[in-house]
Length: 113
Image (cartoon, rainbow, N blue to C red; front, side, top):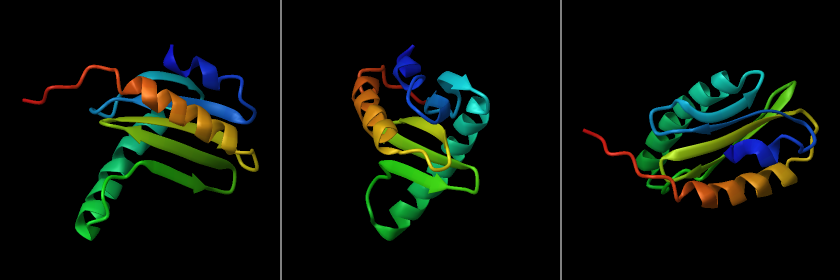
């Protein structure tokens, strides 16, 4: 699947490709479904905040907790995200997600009623 290239990166424990409806189109690892749901919700909040501030589209989301680091990039209506162990070097996952985001652009657009 699209996320196979992320499986062997050091520190990655879960990853998800999230569609416009917030459901994972591809996911692996413990917590991947939670990652998908929460990234979709977080993106909605951040998009609203960004719009109100006149700041443009949200293209990258990243945060760190006591145990994990989460990195996500957006590509149109899609989100690609990964959960890593805290202290992992996030550069490789950021680069891999950016490359995957280019592939996601080729996915069909979702028509909304």
